[in-house]
Image (cartoon, rainbow, N blue to C red; front, side):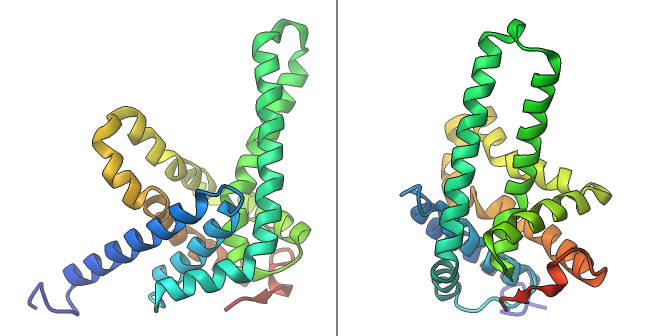
Length: 218
């Protein structure tokens, strides 16, 4: 088959890369106001989950539809996460500066809380992009999926993939800035969406928690 044929794997891969770049630019631009970052990430995962299932259409239209649909819940969740991360960071700084004054159990609880919040953060916007639910229900489902995903190391893998762009930027500096601007969100997001696709399917098939009772957004 001619590699430049529209049906060839090469052209298909180029199409996916082009879509990821466009989607990343949209996500990055709508994350810049900060307060809209939650809705932007939710819309990104909505489109990414379609891409990995070969269901993508007009990604710009789909992105803004999902952005509008999830704006309220995503924004509230994002603000709550920011406040929690800020409080945890302040506590961490205090313990770092005055560590001898705190018993070991307090330090363990703090790092445990950071781990739990990070696990929920990995799943909450993908879950919100896929299911209709209350904010509390979305948080519970995200946490349940993060625990469920530990089986087979899926959650650990998602966490490592999530940190890859920052690690590359730290190691390679300005050399990766152009690539970073084009794929910083959608690059790792695409590989995580592959994991989410399988995880969501298995989670629903096994009848776990409230996921089977939620109305699918698709």
